[in-house]
Length: 153
Image (cartoon, rainbow, N blue to C red):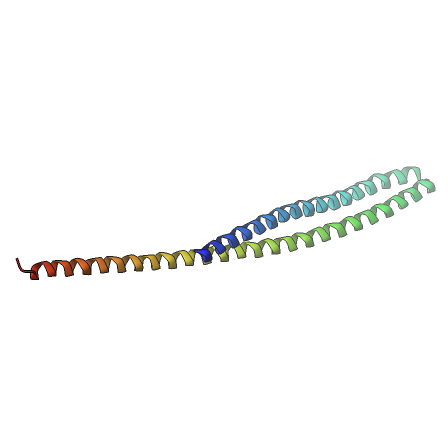
Protein backbone atom coordinates (compact mmCIF):
# COMPACT_ATOMS: atom_id res chain seq x y z
CA UNK A 1 0.00 0.00 0.00
CA UNK A 2 3.07 2.25 0.23
CA UNK A 3 3.09 2.52 -3.55
CA UNK A 4 -0.54 3.65 -3.52
CA UNK A 5 0.19 6.21 -0.81
CA UNK A 6 3.07 7.51 -2.89
CA UNK A 7 0.75 7.84 -5.88
CA UNK A 8 -1.84 9.66 -3.80
CA UNK A 9 0.85 12.03 -2.55
CA UNK A 10 2.00 12.56 -6.13
CA UNK A 11 -1.59 13.24 -7.18
CA UNK A 12 -2.07 15.78 -4.40
CA UNK A 13 1.15 17.51 -5.44
CA UNK A 14 0.14 17.52 -9.11
CA UNK A 15 -3.27 18.93 -8.19
CA UNK A 16 -1.66 21.74 -6.17
CA UNK A 17 0.60 22.55 -9.12
CA UNK A 18 -2.39 22.50 -11.46
CA UNK A 19 -4.38 24.80 -9.16
CA UNK A 20 -1.45 27.22 -8.95
CA UNK A 21 -1.08 27.12 -12.75
CA UNK A 22 -4.79 27.80 -13.15
CA UNK A 23 -4.60 30.77 -10.77
CA UNK A 24 -1.62 32.12 -12.73
CA UNK A 25 -3.52 31.57 -15.98
CA UNK A 26 -6.47 33.57 -14.62
CA UNK A 27 -4.13 36.42 -13.58
CA UNK A 28 -2.49 36.41 -17.00
CA UNK A 29 -5.89 36.47 -18.71
CA UNK A 30 -6.86 39.54 -16.70
CA UNK A 31 -3.50 41.22 -17.39
CA UNK A 32 -3.74 40.53 -21.13
CA UNK A 33 -7.34 41.72 -21.31
CA UNK A 34 -6.51 44.91 -19.37
CA UNK A 35 -3.43 45.67 -21.50
CA UNK A 36 -5.36 45.12 -24.73
CA UNK A 37 -8.26 47.26 -23.49
CA UNK A 38 -5.91 50.07 -22.55
CA UNK A 39 -4.21 49.95 -25.96
CA UNK A 40 -7.59 50.10 -27.68
CA UNK A 41 -8.69 53.00 -25.46
CA UNK A 42 -5.54 54.94 -26.32
CA UNK A 43 -6.09 54.38 -30.03
CA UNK A 44 -9.71 55.49 -29.73
CA UNK A 45 -8.65 58.56 -27.78
CA UNK A 46 -6.09 59.45 -30.46
CA UNK A 47 -8.72 59.16 -33.22
CA UNK A 48 -11.19 61.31 -31.27
CA UNK A 49 -8.47 63.83 -30.41
CA UNK A 50 -7.35 64.12 -34.02
CA UNK A 51 -10.95 64.57 -35.20
CA UNK A 52 -11.70 67.21 -32.58
CA UNK A 53 -8.55 69.23 -33.20
CA UNK A 54 -8.58 69.00 -36.99
CA UNK A 55 -11.80 71.02 -36.87
CA UNK A 56 -10.26 73.45 -34.39
CA UNK A 57 -7.21 73.99 -36.60
CA UNK A 58 -9.31 74.79 -39.63
CA UNK A 59 -11.01 77.52 -37.59
CA UNK A 60 -8.11 79.05 -35.66
CA UNK A 61 -5.05 78.12 -37.72
CA UNK A 62 -2.52 79.13 -35.03
CA UNK A 63 1.00 77.76 -35.53
CA UNK A 64 1.62 77.35 -31.79
CA UNK A 65 -1.54 75.31 -31.41
CA UNK A 66 -0.55 73.10 -34.35
CA UNK A 67 2.90 72.50 -32.86
CA UNK A 68 1.38 71.59 -29.48
CA UNK A 69 -1.04 69.32 -31.22
CA UNK A 70 1.71 67.60 -33.21
CA UNK A 71 3.86 67.15 -30.10
CA UNK A 72 0.98 65.67 -28.17
CA UNK A 73 0.01 63.34 -31.01
CA UNK A 74 3.63 62.19 -31.26
CA UNK A 75 3.75 61.41 -27.52
CA UNK A 76 0.35 59.76 -27.74
CA UNK A 77 1.61 57.60 -30.62
CA UNK A 78 4.61 56.58 -28.52
CA UNK A 79 2.30 55.72 -25.63
CA UNK A 80 0.16 53.63 -27.96
CA UNK A 81 3.24 51.82 -29.29
CA UNK A 82 4.45 51.14 -25.77
CA UNK A 83 1.03 49.91 -24.65
CA UNK A 84 0.81 47.70 -27.74
CA UNK A 85 4.16 46.12 -26.77
CA UNK A 86 2.87 45.65 -23.22
CA UNK A 87 -0.27 43.97 -24.59
CA UNK A 88 1.86 41.71 -26.80
CA UNK A 89 4.05 40.73 -23.84
CA UNK A 90 0.94 40.05 -21.75
CA UNK A 91 -0.46 37.87 -24.54
CA UNK A 92 2.81 35.90 -24.69
CA UNK A 93 2.76 35.41 -20.92
CA UNK A 94 -0.84 34.25 -21.19
CA UNK A 95 0.14 31.67 -23.82
CA UNK A 96 2.94 30.44 -21.56
CA UNK A 97 0.58 30.21 -18.57
CA UNK A 98 -1.94 28.27 -20.70
CA UNK A 99 0.79 25.83 -21.75
CA UNK A 100 1.89 25.32 -18.13
CA UNK A 101 -1.72 24.80 -17.05
CA UNK A 102 -2.38 22.26 -19.83
CA UNK A 103 0.77 20.35 -18.89
CA UNK A 104 -0.25 20.29 -15.23
CA UNK A 105 -3.76 19.10 -16.18
CA UNK A 106 -2.16 16.31 -18.18
CA UNK A 107 0.01 15.31 -15.19
CA UNK A 108 -3.03 15.20 -12.90
CA UNK A 109 -4.95 13.11 -15.43
CA UNK A 110 -2.00 10.76 -15.92
CA UNK A 111 -1.52 10.19 -12.20
CA UNK A 112 -5.28 9.77 -11.75
CA UNK A 113 -5.34 7.18 -14.52
CA UNK A 114 -2.38 5.35 -12.97
CA UNK A 115 -4.13 5.30 -9.59
CA UNK A 116 -7.25 3.97 -11.30
CA UNK A 117 -5.26 1.18 -12.94
CA UNK A 118 -3.58 0.33 -9.64
CA UNK A 119 -6.97 0.21 -7.91
CA UNK A 120 -8.29 -2.15 -10.59
CA UNK A 121 -5.19 -4.34 -10.21
CA UNK A 122 -5.53 -4.35 -6.41
CA UNK A 123 -9.21 -5.27 -6.62
CA UNK A 124 -8.36 -8.08 -9.05
CA UNK A 125 -5.62 -9.33 -6.73
CA UNK A 126 -7.96 -9.15 -3.75
CA UNK A 127 -10.61 -11.01 -5.77
CA UNK A 128 -8.13 -13.76 -6.61
CA UNK A 129 -7.09 -14.06 -2.95
CA UNK A 130 -10.69 -14.22 -1.86
CA UNK A 131 -11.47 -16.84 -4.50
CA UNK A 132 -8.43 -18.87 -3.41
CA UNK A 133 -9.61 -18.77 0.21
CA UNK A 134 -13.11 -19.81 -0.82
CA UNK A 135 -11.69 -22.65 -2.93
CA UNK A 136 -9.51 -23.82 -0.05
CA UNK A 137 -12.44 -23.65 2.36
CA UNK A 138 -14.66 -25.59 -0.05
CA UNK A 139 -11.91 -28.20 -0.48
CA UNK A 140 -11.56 -28.58 3.32
CA UNK A 141 -15.32 -28.94 3.76
CA UNK A 142 -15.42 -31.52 0.99
CA UNK A 143 -12.58 -33.49 2.59
CA UNK A 144 -14.26 -33.28 5.99
CA UNK A 145 -17.55 -34.57 4.57
CA UNK A 146 -15.77 -37.32 2.73
CA UNK A 147 -13.93 -38.22 5.90
CA UNK A 148 -17.20 -38.32 7.85
CA UNK A 149 -18.70 -40.76 5.35
CA UNK A 150 -15.69 -43.01 5.41
CA UNK A 151 -15.33 -43.05 9.20
CA UNK A 152 -16.76 -46.16 10.94
CA UNK A 153 -20.02 -45.56 12.71
